[in-house]
Image: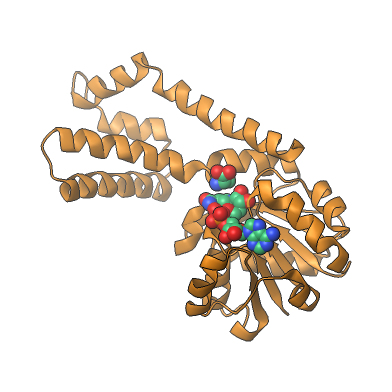
Length: 267
Ligand SMILES: NC(=O)C1=CN([C@@H]2O[C@H](COP(=O)(O)OP(=O)(O)OC[C@H]3O[C@@H](n4cnc5c(N)ncnc54)[C@H](O)[C@@H]3O)[C@@H](O)[C@H]2O)C=CC1
Ligand SMILES: O=C(O)[C@@H]1CCC=N1
């Protein structure tokens, strides 16, 4: 099976690397289509497969095509691919917001899988949700599921609203977590730690808290209760967070991401 990744950016490269690392595809069966000339040398150097600059020279040979360009570039991409597509090809899109029906009509194909991964896929710790059009066969779906599993965990969802919601939670989520970390690192440096000490204090705290939560049955609130002593330091911090509505603000932020994902699908 030949796989073509369209868009050799953060996510396109992540997929290419994962597929090769997991031996799901051989280097000679992997192709990358990238339009930006300054990225070509890097892609060649990394030996992620054959690198192409025009769809005419690679699309027809591909059985599975991974669409990894920005949503705003999708219309122009679809227009350039449409005359070259084959109805037997399977298209896997990871573009935020872009709906299965717009991919089908834009490309003139029926077999479309829409997935929403996240950046930790780079280190095999990704979280992906995916769904598929009716024309995708069970065998094709399992094949793509194997592919997604090389980047971390993956769940099948029934509808595209859930893909947009995944975008707002786990797709964009790493940035929210890193934003929180950034604030804590800044607080630590303001308290006198140097930059590397501050980063270690914060990163190890995040790792420990996440591992605790994932490896046990307690809820977040139950763990929070175990850290907080009555009249203690944690309570002082949490009372301040509550007074400034950080909790609601985070939910509002995630909601704004969902609204944006839905809007991207309509533009
Ligand atoms: N970065 C992230 O954390 C995540 C991104 N996504 C989705 O993945 C997609 C790609 O995102 P990134 O990799 O971060 O973007 P990026 O900007 O790093 O990569 C996109 C690449 O596509 C190339 N490109 C654009 N139009 C093209 C065309 N017509 N032909 C060939 N190449 C073309 C660009 O030159 C660029 O190298 C987006 O749709 C985004 O919504 C999904 C989940 C997480
Ligand atoms: O910010 C974005 O639009 C993309 C989708 C999820 C993560 N990055």
